[in-house]
Image 1 (cartoon, helix red, strand yellow):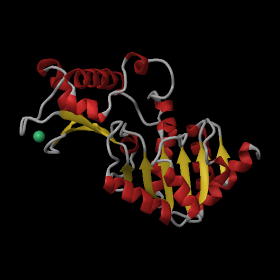
Image 2 (cartoon, rainbow, N blue to C red; image 1 turned 180 degrees about the vertical axis):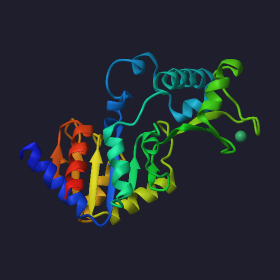
Image 3 (cartoon, protein in one colour; image 1 turned 135 degrees about the vertical axis):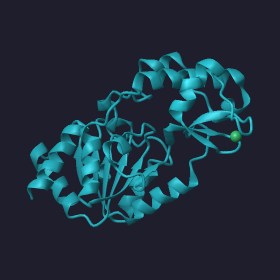
Image 4 (spheres, rainbow, N blue to C red; image 1 turned 60 degrees about the vertical axis):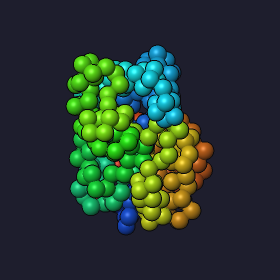
Length: 255
Ligand SMILES: [Zn+2]
């Protein structure tokens, strides 16, 4: 494809000229903040097995293993900071350009970067909250992590006795309807769709860029590896997300 400079210029033009920009992010935007992509080999994911929602609700060992894994991740990642790509998306919102930010990530780094909760749509839930699976009461996740060692790695709701789970969408659990509805609507509405750091392998999330394309949006893809929809992209980057986003923001500011 074209040189990096040409692609940055093209992407900056599209974004600056957009009427309704939707961004869509995956694990690849947060790896530069030190958050591991669980599909990559090595580290924590090799020591814990994946626990499905059905196992979580029916099996004591699965609940304990799941919370131990979440606790180790929490301790490792609680100081993770947004990187230049997150900060660039916050800047695009402040400029009035970015209208919706759909994310597959559960790390809360978009809000830390300064994007407002109103425009962030977390289709896989969030690690920042815990929820009772029976009465839907929620807690800040720090509160639950701070009591795990006292109550054992199987926290229960003090209101109804139900099991408490991080407010993320587990394997085998339905996607949240409201968030998926908002994501689909945003994809339809967008005229420019900026995808950062997703290999677009997981359905139904991967269908969102496809919807934007079918609705006539120009697609900009920033991802280290190939995706099944690369042929739909008007501009394609394999470079680092933070470097590309910094380059785009600098060009938009100059114009
Ligand atoms: Zn409850």
